[in-house]
Length: 91
Length: 411
Image (cartoon, rainbow over the protein chains, first blue to last red):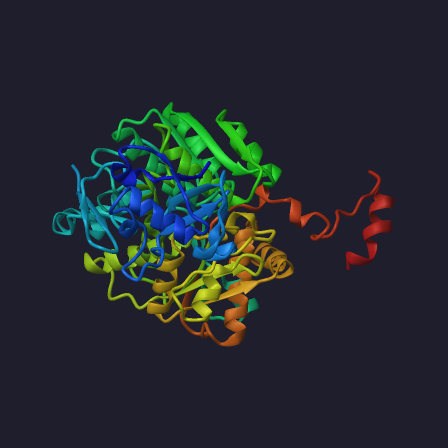
């Protein structure tokens, strides 16, 4: 078991074309670090130079925006679904 | 002929060909259409525009299509009129209403964005169109796609007003009602758009779609006699309309069609969903998402895509923002109805009520030319008005009954 991470289309080139990958970690931050280990170069696309999530990226844990949870310290566990989604959509 | 040079990330400046893309592949920033303004300047003159049909396509050079328009040929060019009685009620001298409550054919400003989006979707080779909607957009996508012969799916929150649901169903789309709020609908559509080969107008072809909102601003400027107003009050959901009205005035100014625009922009939101107003009032560009709870369902976007850009546009213009309660929204709807004979939906009630508040505060001065953006029709949102507008006087079909019930009101 692990956490399923859904990868947005523009980043799928870095995940060998996969739209979903499995990662490990106890928090969103740890998960992103693990994602970077498996697919080098992906973290800088999701986070800015300070390591913070970019302004135009939203992350959801089990369909809830992490800004309503504990941000990048939001806990994740085996079996959870995490989505990384471009913010510029809708309205 | 095409006036599109290409697409460009508003954040990092990366360039893209004019295909299907809604966010920068590198930084996820917003994608903007780049135009050949030098070529446009040669054909888009006041005289040329004035000679064209009265539709949103009279500004075709500034819209992101390659060929001729094929959708929404009768949409746009809604009335802009001097609102003397509402102006007197609010205490401003020169007040105007730009009335998209009578937009053809689906009675909201979404006819504009959809006309552009579907024309572009056809050019890009799509046979199926879709959207994430709070109601008005679903109506417009369904209607225009029906007329254009496109397959259509619309995704809405399950708790929408019945008028907005019926006004989609009649055009025979697939209506998907999602158990969640608009932000849930939007997230799901973002994920679906990566999986299915459909043109989600406000997701994967959003850069083209959003440009359609500029026509609201173009019309305001043309109808005011080729000048931008001093103040404009704009309802904010995603915030896109604010940024595109600002862009419309800037483009007209750049092309020499209007004198230098110094328009102050004012964002109008409901208290139950005011992430953009909150950011503007705090003078920050960090948009804190909220869980919406308001009768203004068409503005109930808690995680606004263009919140950042709308906030910047308002602050740079020297404008402001306010939020109003559900009661104030209903009062705004009544006030517009009883003074100007226009029946607007809850979003329009928000605009009127916010304008009232800003004028009373002295934030909007009493002497400039002020435009209120009325973007939707009241017949679609009857539920919150039930029991709030009084009742008809019920009588028997006799003179006696009439005079008994109404006699004292007749003198």
